[in-house]
Image (tube, rainbow, N blue to C red; front, side):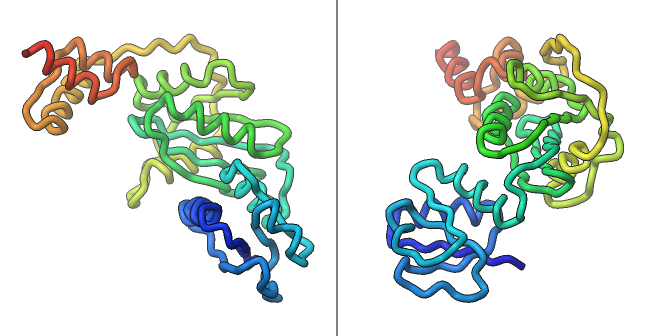
Amino acid sequence: MKILAVATDNFEFYYEIVRELKQRDIAFVSLSPTDPIPPNVDLVITTEQEAEGIDFQNIVSIEQDIRKGVRRALSILKGKQTYQKMLVGIDPGTEPGIALVGDGKILETMNADSPEKVRDIIKGFIEDYSFQRMTVRIGHGDKTNRNRTITSLKGLAVRIEIVNEEDTTQLTESPDIEAAKKIALSIGKLAEGPYDVEATEGEMREMQRRSRIESGEITISKKLAKKVVEGDMEMKEAINEQKEEEG
């Protein structure tokens, strides 16, 4: 196993780097820039200023964009600075599961806060990784959230495919993440659209039920529930508007 070291005396930088590495479940050792580099360390992450004083061949110096710097460091650590084929699997839902696969290997997994937030995550992949081509694959289920996700990706220079996800459900702690991994590795059909977003009666009733749970007393109207389901309004906004309407 290749070892990563974080060498810095900058507390703020250290905090941000460690948070990013822990989110990715990446093991590392902590050093001061003046410490000798252990022989088992393969790559050092540090600041641009501190890099000048570190006598080591493989150094990634990061100044501002922590996320991008960590992604670059991990790619170097894996010996893959450029990928031929990037695949993004998305398990649609209110908090979509996402898996990034580079040349057949899982690079990252995460959940987006909403279907619309998927765009920011994929845009980050495009900006932070070097690759020849990218295909985004999304499961065909949960039509409303699937269409919200596809709509949010409009304008990004990626191929979008819809995958039959009948065999992707897993009985694990993170079924949406496991499904996203399988979706990424499954061939789909080109998403040609348009993909209209239209809330169903069942989805609106479910959103009304959730509003009662979240607020403790308020049930939002069907009209507001429709807006929440279709991504035009946050639940908190809908609850506040309902409170104002009820006086």
